[in-house]
Picture 1 (cartoon, rainbow, N blue to C red):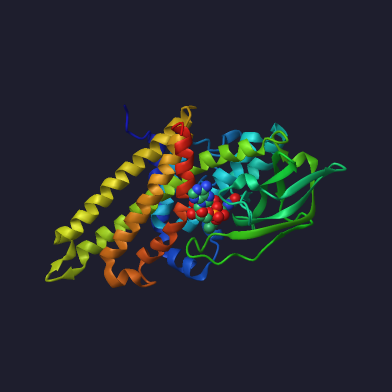
Picture 2: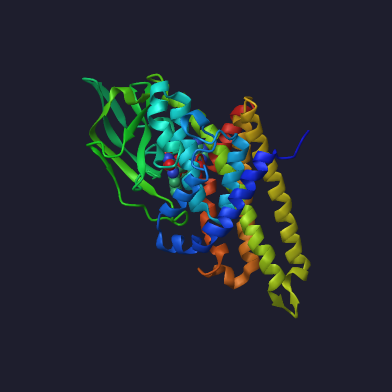
Length: 377
Ligand SMILES: Cc1cc2nc3c(=O)[nH]c(=O)nc-3n(C[C@H](O)[C@H](O)[C@H](O)COP(=O)(O)OP(=O)(O)OC[C@H]3O[C@@H](n4cnc5c(N)ncnc54)[C@H](O)[C@@H]3O)c2cc1C
């Protein structure tokens, strides 16, 4: 086995690590406090080729592999989750359906703007009455005179309402037993987007409620075959889980970094608290679990890059790193004592940003359901 990263993967890791430290870290707390979407950072990420990292070069992407992409997301999350989820949702959820299911014409029309990061994409699966049970979609798309007439609503949709959002791929019922994926571009009459939703964490990311009222979408905006939407969104979520799992490792690593530094600097009883075994054991457990989680994420990415089945490993990685990031963020805040509870400490932001990693793209319970299915249960 070869555990070394390739020179390209190392280059991506070092580039994103430097970018996150130099460009994101100085403003992350302010963006979070103000709930401001970081257009300037997205433009810089686009300049680095990071808004279309795993998209082939012929469609305007960087042509990187899934492992490089996971490493980039991990490094971003280590400093700031809002920026990381903006990239991850745009790439894995917004852009991938077009790459995977679009016709050549659709890919040529839409991907270059998205992969270059000039525009952002969203994926709308969740509805008020269809969360974990995503197949319970109520939104409908009825074909009439060459247009899909969309009616319904979507909830908690990332990237849907920024000034540079291009559109959203939604799941909609196109028949009694048929769900299909349909692209709705921003600005389409009948498509309205709520103001940004207020959140516990990921405060500088864009989250919206969408509603469709007799919204007419061109017939050619159907992605893939009519009725294939259920299978398609399951596949999209399988891939997306690798990036959310990478966020779990990145968040845990970031929390560990903060706790490690604080433990060596904070003096109590005449010594740095890092000299107390109760603290060093916590840090040792954190480092051990992070190592295990990273290995799971990299393996799932490696399987995907090798063209092998990866859904089971992606769900396991997502479950494990979601729970791992919870334990690590909690222990890291504990090491900060009362200062960790203050808004001015970075760990308090990471602690708030952590919880969604156990909810988004399938809750912990849903991951266990997926894993159990793969185990034949
Ligand atoms: C910040 C944010 C961003 C998001 N971005 C997007 C996005 O871009 N696109 C999108 O489509 N969605 C998005 N989501 C939605 C997210 O994927 C859902 O919130 C998630 O899938 C859970 O659905 P739910 O919130 O309806 O919870 P529910 O499904 O109502 O679940 C509630 C609880 O019941 C449990 N539960 C449900 N069914 C079972 C069962 N069978 N067995 C055991 N336990 C069960 C769940 O695990 C959970 O603990 C986002 C959510 C948030 C908070």
